[in-house]
Image (cartoon, rainbow, N blue to C red; front, side, top):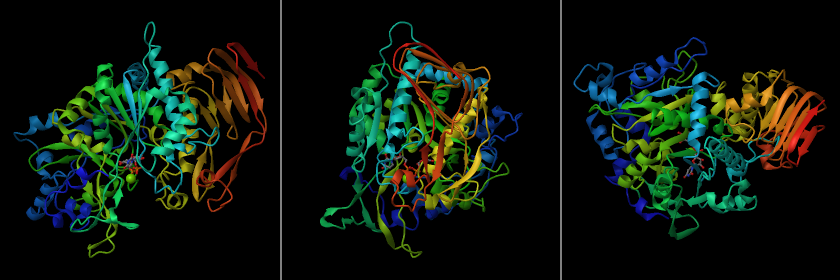
Length: 615
Ligand SMILES: O=c1ccn([C@@H]2O[C@H](COP(=O)(O)OP(=O)(O)O[C@H]3OC[C@@H](O)[C@H](O)[C@H]3O)[C@@H](O)[C@H]2O)c(=O)[nH]1
Ligand SMILES: [Mg+2]
């Protein structure tokens, strides 16, 4: 338990816990001027203009009256910035110059376009100077899965679990990046996993029993976060463990712990000395993420962002934070994530009676934070030397009723890793990169029952949708590379209607950028909707292939395989499994289907050499 943190509550506890922290405080205080018009689907839309809109903060504005008592409360908290709308909206004042320097820019990317491809190349070059940090201390209570989330299969065609996919992606980036270097490149990309008491031993066991999925054990560091003391009531009395009255109850302190852990571990200095330049943070269950990594790192390097947050278009009420611009009454502004549970009350309190609503584009005007952060190492170390990695904390008590006296369960201080920019000076280069959702974000967070209840048109964020998103992304990427991929069919699993695309998967070493994909498919290729294609080898060239069934190709390093012709078989069939069916394994039940491997063409090349497979 971390007592240092638990004693850090300042100010009158009454104030601190008065009311619903989020509702009350925002009510009085903050204002949004930021906002952003999502790229419409129309092709001739000017991205530059969109980015400028973000930069100028001109898309929405409003005004509010500040209640001085409440605002004192806010100042106690020092948590949310305050503002009078006039500060930016009617800006011609002495502060303007100053303000314009504060405003970060954002890059809006579309997959496969020239600048995307350019950024990918830059990103791959830079990857050997990066370290990756996975925050995986969370239990995933919303998912209701009993194991650790990184052990879940990201898709069930190959059964590759999240952590395996992440490790293989990092290794593929490492290899691809080293290929840019003349002569020998010995760089091994460091990989840190933040665990907690809830996940630590199971994470370690998973890695050890799988030989670290091909990574050198010395490349991997586990940092365990500690839980913090819980508070039982509005007077911030310590809550006792229900099973042991001599023990203080503890709960997780949030993913924001990652910064102080990295700092105190000494790793940042080691990386700096070794010449690394970037630290990439990511979360536990997003099977698409690494498709967005090369381009995003390229954006950081090209634009010299100290902080780069990856974002996607956000649907109103989607459980992802909104990137917004907050303006303080004194003119300070900040582009920062506003967590999803705060966005609606904040908007309502600041002159947007509809709250968290879609704008005319059908999306929220605020880009959705996917909590993938790219930091430049040098400035990061400099900042942490000052702060020690402490992140602004908050409390989010859930009350039993509207009298707001008793908690549903004990609360505690928490912090979020994306709040890191809050302590940065105005001169910091903080930006964001907006990517296509289909390419970058499909987390697995919701259990089937909750997923089926999300508003129509919003992403389910379930094991079902997470898996389908991988097939869709791979299908769309191959389409873009010239392969004729059949349209998906709609199907319902666990009460969720999803698009089922051909089940196309490949190992990251086959291709981690669009350029690599294009170099590995040629001629006239087609894949039917009922098909499954699994490519496991690095040098597998797909040429003039017509696939209607299942094809699995594996090849060792050094085996160059050309595969083509017409492959037809009964293939692999998706069979419905109800999540209530207790006879099925949990990871099958939560996705609502299993794969029946009826018939396939499977070839494995164990020896180096040149091979051609033509049907
Ligand atoms: O104490 C903790 C809590 C969480 N985590 C990790 O942090 C990651 C995110 O946790 P959650 O899935 O609970 O996050 P949430 O869905 O609540 O929101 C998060 O992701 C979506 C973004 O839009 C939000 O801004 C971000 O906070 C997970 O990888 C989890 O394992 C920790 O490592 N420690
Ligand atoms: Mg959470």
